[in-house]
Image (cartoon, rainbow, N blue to C red; front, side):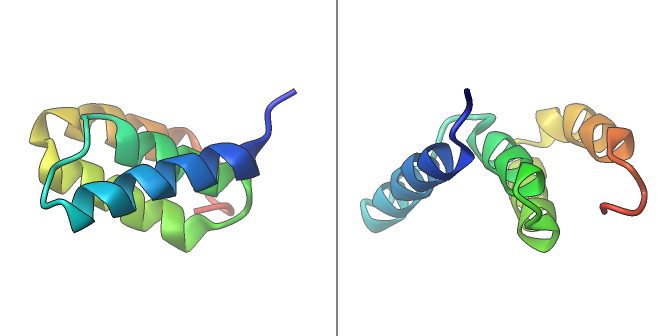
Length: 76
């Protein structure tokens, strides 16, 4: 069973720690966090994370756009 809340907390801690230390996060982290937010009904936060991913890692734009298009239109 997947515990989204635990995963979200862990990823948010990684982001906060990286920001506090002036470091960057690995590629895919914001996209993963976005999917977790989406899966828990936090659509606006999901979109923000997808945008961060695309901004920090332009090479992931195609993947992030694909993921966003795969979601039901009513959800996003």
